[in-house]
Amino acid sequence: MNAYIALFRAINVGGNNPLSMKALVELLEDMGLRNVRTYIQSGNAVFDSDAKDVASLVKSISAAIKKGHGFTPQLIVLRSAELMKAIHSNPYPEAESEPATLHVTFLSAAPKQPDLRALNAVKAANERFTLQGKLFYLHAPDGIGRSKLAALIEKALGVPGTARNWRTIVKLAELSR
Figure 1: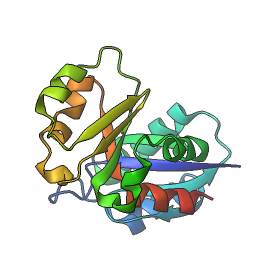
Figure 2: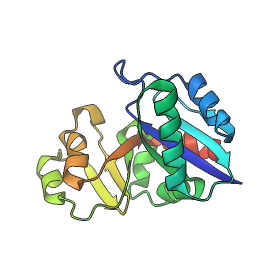
Figure 3: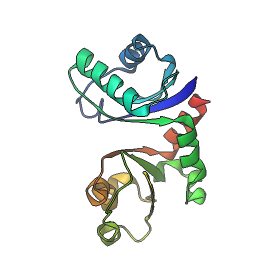
Figure 4: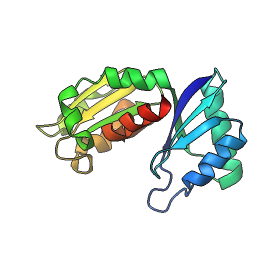
């Protein structure tokens, strides 16, 4: 049995792509996934499965949501060990004390030609970022809502992703244990 974390992008945001967490739990359980837990309304689920292939899980979950709710969400599924590696690889451990300022964007793939110069050109003086394979860490002390860099991440990296703040990441790791 493997623990997985599903990170949904752009559900329940601004009235778009509504999917209650209760409905998501039911949907995932109906697919045979076990011990399903969710965290906050923005689309985070933790579950257990015998599945070995993450890509198949993503396809199955996306198809079930499309069938039951009429939209196909962008979705990244991580193994519990991948989330723990992201936590332990944090290049800004001193920022963990202010978890709302520290974000990790989980990317669908490692960028092949990331435009880090574009990100450096728009970052605030007190912002820091690090790209590590399929993980993009951003420490934005003034908040992500004010960050020009945060708004440019996917365009500059050339791959889609979904970001979570440090508080959410730690909570998801707790739920996946």
